[in-house]
Each structure stands twice: as C-alpha cells, then as structure tokens.
Length: 232
Image 1: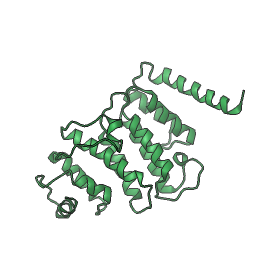
Image 2 (image 1 turned 180 degrees about the vertical axis):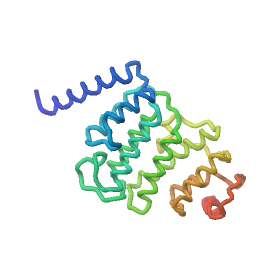
Image 3 (image 1 turned 90 degrees about the vertical axis):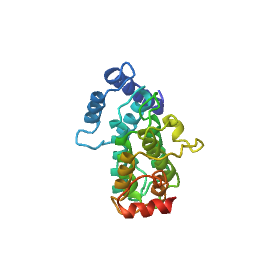
Image 4 (image 1 turned 45 degrees about the vertical axis):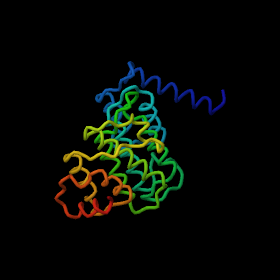
C-alpha cells in the first residue's frame, strides 16, 4: 500500500474509533468534548499538528458540537500565533502575532463546522476566543481575510443574542451573505464595548462591530461613544 494511502487509512480509522467512542449518534456532548480535550491536550496544549487536525475533523463530522471545543481550538491557534510556532501552525515558518492565509483557512473550518448541522450562531465562548485572537494580532500584517471573518462571526453572535434573526452559521460567515443591520440589546452592547476597550483602541473590524450598537444604546464610557460616533 502506498505510504500516503496508509496514512489516510490510519487517519480514517482513528476518526471512526473516536466517533464510535465519543459521538456514536452524531451528537458530541459537553462531557465527551472535555474528555477529547483531556485526551489530546492533557496539559492544556495539543502536542501535534495531527492532533489539531483530528479535533477539527471531529467538529466537522459531528452533527452537534458544544461550543467549548471550537472555542478551545481557536485558543490553540491563538497561543501558537503569539509564539510564532506550535502544532496549530504546522512546521512552516511563521511570524509571531500575524495571521496568514493558512491560519485563516483553519479558523474558517473550525467556525463553519461550529455547532454542527444545526447551523446555530457563533457562541459567546467562541466570540471571546476570537477577540483574544484578534487582540493578539491587532498590530500585525494579518491576511486580509481575517477582518471580515472576525466581524461576521462576532456580529452573528451579537445579533442572534440580541434576538434578531440571522442566517445559519455557514451562510453568516460567507462574504456573499448580507448580515442584518440591527441594534444590539444593552447587554450585548455592553459586552462588546468592554471587549473593545480592553486594549483601549478600535481596529477596522471592531469599528464595523461598533456600528451595530447605534445611537440609542446607553454606553457610559465616553471613549467607546467616540468610537461609535466615528463608526457611524
């Protein structure tokens, strides 16, 4: 058997074993997700690129996935990007605190698979992890695809959490799908303002998000209101 075919077969066998053990009915529970994380990252970090790929494939295979697993993988990417090396980046040369096209491709896979076939909006856990990744790379020359993916993912979360109808997750992340422009409720506006002011500045993608707050929301921080007025 050809070496590449053997590797592919072995990967398929591993995934089938994981499916039978952790989500035989297609639903990955939170307990099963935590067990998978403990198996592949016993010390909090996935040790190999194949481990990152396996966990990503699990998300893609499952019909329903708890938010903690995709959020965990976004965090793994963030840690590797900060260091400029790590399993999430593979063996290729990589600048510290910069997201390249391959990083964005992995991030998109994780986010699109998200909660599985239900197409549920991006969760708060994933949005928090995305903001950590955004803040860690805000000063770098990121691949142009990151700003839009970040904006769409966080906006879909905020809009859905504010009670607005949003497209299914995969569609919401696609550039050709229009997202609704609707005001956020006070709780979501306050969370967004707090996250953006954590580093005291607003990037282009964050200004796009701030435009969702609008004039009618009461945001006491004058710095945030300045950014909102600028975004409008």
